[in-house]
Image (cartoon, rainbow, N blue to C red; front, side):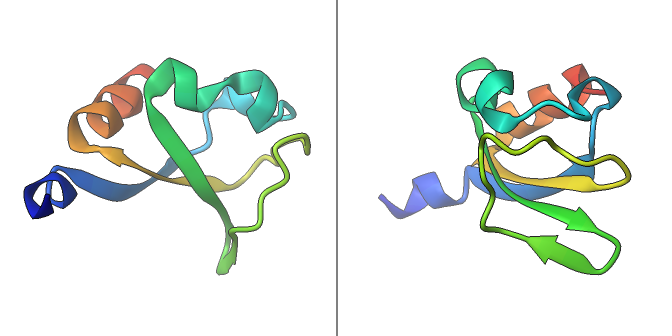
Length: 79
């Protein structure tokens, strides 16, 4: 069971322009990319109590957790 942990990571990446103003519920990130958004970082402020129906702000980055292969694939697709 412990080996599974090492195949997963947490990553931070820039907010895709296409996500700005949309909410997590509508983006369906978990279903589409197999990753979980666990926070949003704006400057030095990190928000982890996300409301999935709240529009995502611009000028921020996304903090996600997932399997390494899924994080890498989503990072490529969301550039």
